[in-house]
Image (cartoon, rainbow, N blue to C red; front, side, top):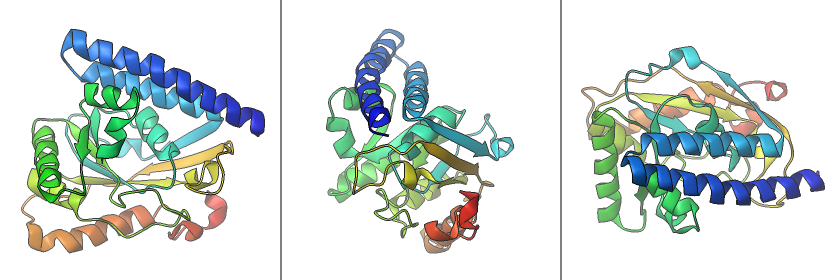
Length: 246
């Protein structure tokens, strides 16, 4: 486990520099972010491989690659990011914490890939980020959000924040729930830096329409999406499936 962990962090560091540089270079030359996002997909798969993490994806048949959506996933671990990047086979952009865009190499690569920073400490800037993300969706590019806002400390599904649902309501495009089960055991948010190789289950749910909904429907929409995510989590993750399923 120690050797695996050291190997993973070495690969993470090297791949972030090399693939991040490739994403920036690609976006600069082509003036498009689609190819840069493919670099990010490679980065996700490389780091899943380095950690010895297998991702089983369920429900891919529910994805309509010709349409754009708000994808909403629960957040247990860093490995949720790698899993979604590597295994969600559509062009999408993250709506992500502004602090991530300050990180060495990762931040510039995220900007090159067209990802959208959201500064939750500044209400005006946050609303502007949501407006920009809604515009991207209407133009045909999906956006991925973590409605919990941050990783769970204990792996249990947390309460949802409202921003991502305002995004869905503004865009009037459907929300697709993504349930990620088992990633907390790979690398919890606190307690250890060691990687525990294992298996993650990622389930793509049925799209939930938002057309015609207004801010008055926001709380009901949040509940519906949260229950759709919960349906594919285990009991210990705040869901309904037997824990052995993870």
